Amino acid sequence: MTADLAELVALAKEGDQQAFEELVRATYVDTYTLALRLTGDEEDARDVVQESYLRAYKGLKRFRGDARFSTWMYRITANCAANQLGKRVKHRHDELDDDGAMIDDRPEHDPEAQADAGDLRRRLTSALAELPPRLRTVVVLRDVYDLPHEAIAAELGISESAAKVRLHRARRKLRERLFNGRDTGEEEQAHAV
Image (cartoon, rainbow, N blue to C red):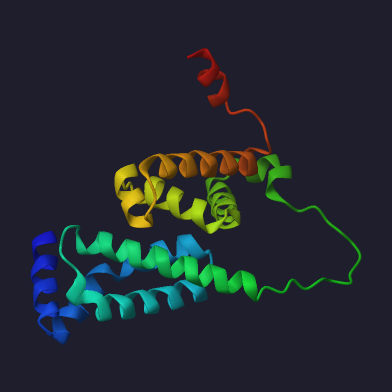
């Protein structure tokens, strides 16, 4: 598949519209999944994907092939998602209900719900969405897409040590949100070393 993508990239760089459409088809699911994980919203994810492919099409001649096309798309998608999230924060309006009755229906207060793996996934997605974009991007690229620290640093234009620090902070914030500050044993292990 990688060789096929390289051929498609070469053809698309020469102006072959059909080749670019094939590239989109071959990478769309991964690109959309990344956009959804970074934005936490389906509509925003669709906007990010559209913008990502538009940027890829316009910048294809500058793609040198040092990295795989899919990795290049991850970088473009992460940048577009960060832009989209910045727009969302500027135009965010929270509406308040006048119902008056506050019911605490959070799943972390229901032991049965915590046992459900689907619930944990939803909580993780929610906690991930609450992270600042710069932390969310690092944790998604490392823990979901398994990119090495070096590649993450290159993609984001930061040092490798900065990527590691951001990843550590993101994971700590996720643990705090998911486990309500309960010690997960990792800190005890760190102190023992």
